[in-house]
Image 1 (cartoon, helix red, strand yellow):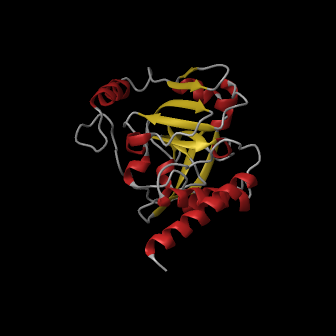
Image 2: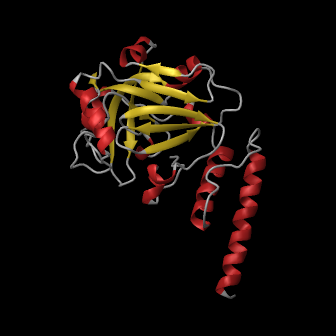
Image 3: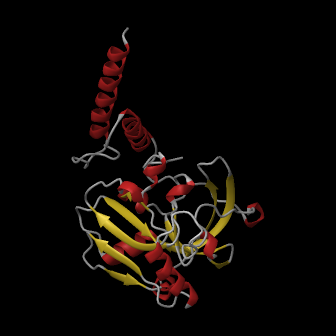
Length: 256
């Protein structure tokens, strides 16, 4: 068989599987993520479709006991205000530095997009929500894992307070280290997806994302973005271009 024939047949199989995947996900008449680009990205779509079709939609990640808590390295950007760190954006870095120096008293998390009541939340506002603590395993895409205790507010509570509109399908997260990522609504509303402001019984440390970070316990670690700044609810899939992890060749969906 010639190479071009092999590629054509493979593309046809993938396209067919993607179409079947659309039938397996009721209510998703629009394009499914990730629907962009080349054969590799269609493979991402197959993974996403298979997970959604074959696995329980909101099954819980395993939780551990305090004796299981381990050392937990901080990787990537460990301080957005430090110009020597990767992903540094001067404007965001200067803003983050001012907020950090004031103990994050002036920090606000903006909730925008397809919500009935857009607004912003201070750290004190988030702490007024009923808190949730979970001890879970962080699975890093680099091959290591660590167990930590996280305290915060379920993302679902914040989104419901903002009033998710019926058309909303995705939630995108923007950070002070000039990165971004997104979830579909199923993972955003998962009972273990939280906005974490505490780690191992203390305030969240700066290297781990202070004042708050996302915790997505059902996906690989890079989905749990640090240094949250804005949350935008949307009805359209966006791979977030150069801001998202895809710039490094990582999948938009990283379910485990």
